[in-house]
Amino acid sequence: MSPFVAAIWIMDDGSRDRNQLRINSQCFTKKDNMTLQDILRAKLGIVTTLNQDKNRYRIRVKSESMNRLVRIITPFIIPSMLYKLPL
Image (cartoon, rainbow, N blue to C red; front, side, top):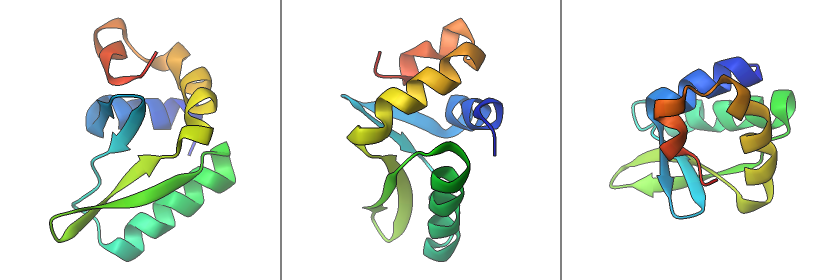
């Protein structure tokens, strides 16, 4: 996981909800999502929670990590995808 990989992932599966960012990772199991959370925290310093979406789970970036996430991935976000970030 790198800022570049995170930017691609967010351009594909990210969605902004007000000042939050969700990664639509519902195709993964809860355990897999927890592993992805660990990777985001260990490699990028991004703290997340899991949101339940019906009977599946997705990753939500905690507000305390939003500034850091935006700062490290914005250089890799193509202009047409900037709408996904709470800037």
